[in-house]
Length: 298
Image (cartoon, rainbow, N blue to C red; front, side, top):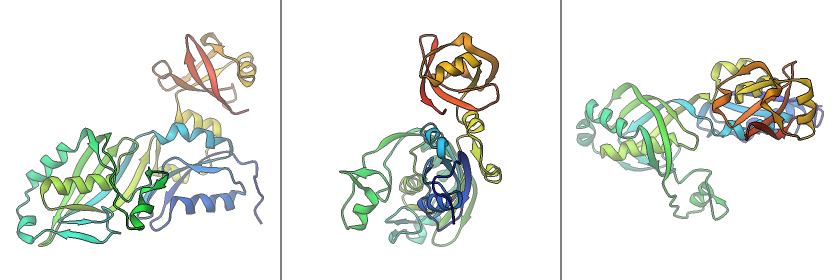
């Protein structure tokens, strides 16, 4: 029988399989490690697989700084039909006729993809976890309500077609996508279909990277909090006197830093602070030439 609230701390990168919810993964991790303190940095739909970053114990306090990271996916978009959910799990709403589908050229697809790259306004899928009047949008849709979610700014850093496969009824487009946090790849599929006039939806989605964590990290096991902090933020090793100050919540001067730095510390307003052994001490914010602790780990 697993212990409850075991002394387990660190990040865990999971390669989530299809058909499993992010909540299912969190629940199983709680049982496996014997701790209730488990959270994740960005959910994945049951129909998607790939990188799911979990925080255990003290590392849950890092998740806030990981959620906003960019994400990278490989996906398949089916052009020629729209669905209720903008993916293959939903009922088909409209099917384009074969002539309209065959009229869409590779050049037209490339132009439409280019128009959805960069800083864009995106209307999230109605079947999403966004809250409207205190209730998740997907719950409202399932209850039969009409849901309209306002468009919001997102950034599509890369939207690259890899392969186009055609049939009489549809066009399947394999793509690589790298996007800012809060971007819905399902909505990209829907909008691409709209621009081409034949509709579209997502049929496959795999997240291959979330921030600095990639699929290969799923084999690394539990990542200690200090190593996780280095991965999450530009980090600095501080001397022993500064460690004591930080533990009491006091600001420290930049002169307290040892020589070791990781990441572009000068370009960041928030950094990780570690002791000489590499243990995580705090997350701190730059304030007028000093660093003020905002999260203290010890």
